[in-house]
Image 1 (tube, rainbow, N blue to C red):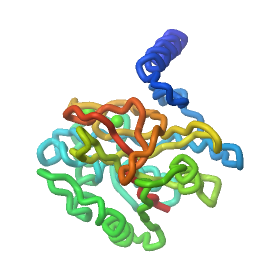
Image 2: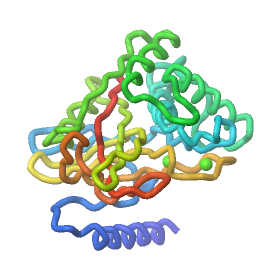
Image 3: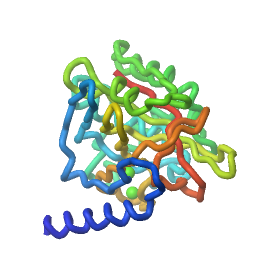
Image 4: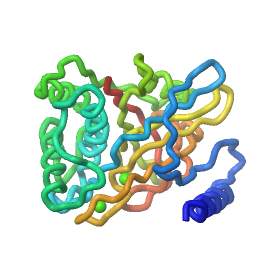
Length: 271
Ligand SMILES: [Ca+2]
Ligand SMILES: [Ca+2]
């Protein structure tokens, strides 16, 4: 069974390599499985490999959120990071069981936790979340839970020529554990920004003089509103910089409706 899965993954990777071959020397986007996640915290002058495996991957589309959570990517991405911190030194940060439980009560408890974060962020069920207020909103939330020492800080990658290395420096924690971070993505079509999205970063890997990639949990990867889907990490190589928009996420499609390209605008690091 496991061997078959591995073969399927290798086939998927090979297909992706063909689909994305464009003369750009990069790692291709490859579907990884939670079972194969290996925690890592290595970083040196030649490269880096930062990966945290036990971050949840909460679905934003759920029955217990307003408009079934269609505009709740930001509080859900943050909730993933907060649940991890809750299990690693901040036990009063958030309530509920995000992953692997599918009873109505569990789903609704998780939705309640998401709605609390959304209230701090001013999330509009019809319009999403203003990225600019998210760091302050998160810090206010942390204080409300008794953790005034936790911080949330935005770093722009919009014009960063080495975004992978910047990410590795941001994610590398001081205690041998990776810092939590949520990533702000933008979608572009015909030269115009047409949408935004927020995901929970779980790692980054790259070489100082070569390619780099990011791995994240996408809140919008499943549309079954009555069940929590399994952890489903997505890895995308960082491609060419789009000025004022950040590096291209190679192979990532527009979310919800179609778009041309998706770019990594910046990250909010929580530590
Ligand atoms: Ca997901
Ligand atoms: Ca679901």
